[in-house]
Length: 166
Image (cartoon, rainbow, N blue to C red; front, top):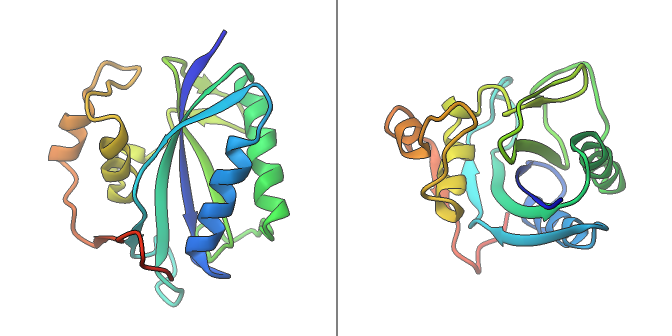
């Protein structure tokens, strides 16, 4: 049964705009999955260590028949294919980060996956691109996306135009 899923994308290494475009193409090619929408690209300040490049972020909507863990495995394969190396440092620089933000109305609490994504409610680089493609969205707990946006300023974000690249 098809489920609407929202994926957060981020990169701050190895030509981040190209990393995100390549990731979107790879997501669109996943079996049992259709890419429905993608937000604009946004530049954001890094979380964690400040001595790293700014991030380029986006959010994608897809419909999938995959289970949450099967989708997670597919996304992690895309990350690895684009040069992602998982390190102990939690918020360090990376070629690609793909996070399942929402998986329909499911709430998942597995050792490898928590959905809705933890702290998404406080991350402008997630909420504003998400609102661009799903402005009337409600989270599984009933909160409206507009409510989350009202508590999360746009500060530190810059929307890229289509011809920009980083």
